Image 1 (cartoon, rainbow, N blue to C red):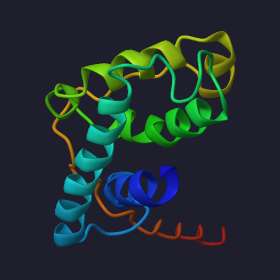
Image 2 (cartoon, one colour):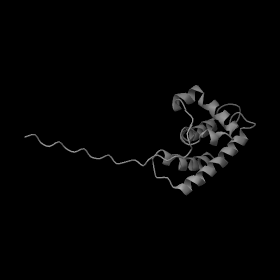
Image 3 (cartoon, helix red, strand yellow):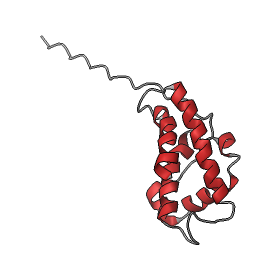
Image 4 (cartoon, rainbow, N blue to C red):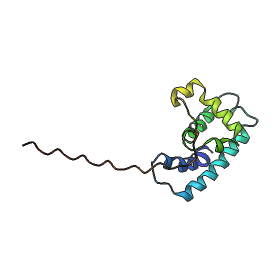
Length: 134
């Protein structure tokens, strides 16, 4: 679930924002809908569960939380996250654990408009060599 249903569409949305590759608007629109579906599944599961599996943090929680971090930082703004209260409760529970903080650092959630692509990276212009002194 994590890789195919969540990570692929999420990073189709995130990577253009990071400037890794140019945005393809049709792919981004489709990715946003796929991310919503995946987050809805997770949110519904977390309605009656504190963790993804069992009663403590497991590899499932670690994998899904880490998959969501860049999206939470860059594209999943407050308006997008609003319908996913159970997921956000769980995500905040995970990122507040000392072990998560040690690896991820402080996670600041996206506050701006979701999906603004970064400007394409410009190639650095070569510096002109100084003229030889006479």
